[in-house]
Image (tube, rainbow, N blue to C red):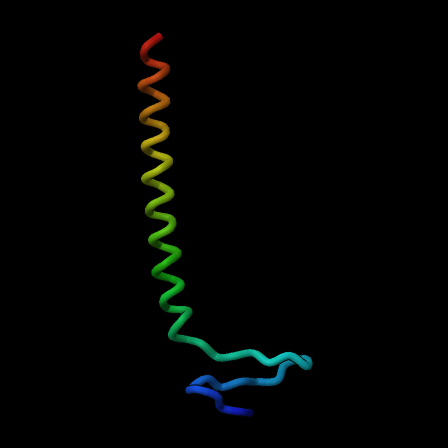
Length: 56
């Protein structure tokens, strides 16, 4: 193993993988934020579509 800038590198199948547990936690929060924004966009679209259909 080789340590570079507080990241432990492992040789797996000829490739090197980094252990980045802190970035995984940040990505989980980002995933929840993206899902939240996506749900808001979908709900807004459905509301506008219903408003459009209701005019006929």
